[in-house]
Length: 536
Figure 1 (cartoon, rainbow, N blue to C red):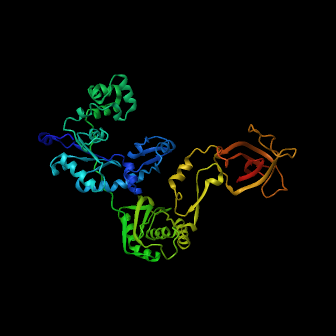
Figure 2 (figure 1 turned 135 degrees about the vertical axis):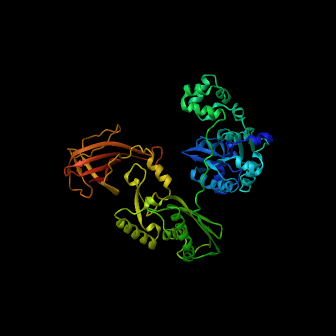
Figure 3 (figure 1 turned 90 degrees about the horizontal axis):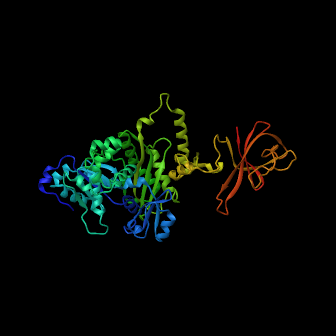
């Protein structure tokens, strides 16, 4: 830790920045959420690659952007979890709230990294080093023992001062690095150009013989701007310790969560619904007072035996108090519990607004919303009487076959039980999928049909993907004795599903218009014709 003299403390100005950095925050958040030990071998995966990994996993050779199978081959006991950015923010929120209680004026740059104006805390606690020590002590009470703090004249220099505390891997060193006022440029001078996060500029500067931030900052500011433009001028100011960005104070969000503890534990669903009614009203009132409505709510239930039930609920409009009560009741019933009794008593119920929207965006239209309101009330009433899964609505998912793309979900769940996976699957390329416009009628299961040529022989596709004969007549589904002339046809379009697996399928898709003007979507699989859908 580099200490500053009293004269340097007196000279510090309002531009001094204190930067808090929590190394490996995605891993730290996941360990907390999953209740895993700090020495667990954990990897967070995004798009099939390792996004972050714990120190224990790194010691076994796991690193970022490694494929999952390769990472598991290097570390036999590796735990693999999907990376969730929302989890990082949710777990870091209590940390920011704790900082704001002792040092107001926090700017959250990203989960695990935040900036604080150093002037006020240094005056109150007797210096920048003392203020940083108080902050680390506060974080240690929350279980964050590996936090790092850097203090400098600019956010860029302060962040790298915080990261500089881990330069010596495995060595005993302080978690605070204070760069004296006016020495930020000297501190940054030995850093490589890559820390500027400008790869194209770094390549060009290296060709000119410039290898460090010190070499770059030695250039005249005017010449840098004329040669490299605005981006180069900003990078030059960062390298010189003159980053013009200041701390933008975060406005703490309103407290919208509702947490209720029950003592003794409640063992009947109807008792729980009655006891939570007032809290549900308070939850909705808090949102309304803030000019918000909740469209996605998280309900967390804690039982007397230590079990935790955590689920996200979506609403086609927005939640009112009755809707909240219904979701709490459905969540209890969905775990295989009987109608009026619980396997163990409920000791805590927490409702968290996961997605909120402006109340004005959900105001009634000029001519009212009578029909929509009536439909919603009717479906919600049926759902309330028969259960969450009793009323279903359709949504479009991903897939090659039309039947696979039609998914039924409970009313109110806008994207099913796993909205992230459903949206991701829908956006995949899906080679062989049918382009628009989609057919109007999709059969529950393909219906058997016949397609023959002028001689009465069945039309087929050879090994080269070419038709053996031209389609001339078509027998529609359900009418084996009726034959219709084929006026137009298109295809074949091959579909190969899971070609590497024994359960894979190889088929061809056709479009056909018969003499009545009816249009059909046909499949040819194993020399047999099927009707998959029909067009209006």
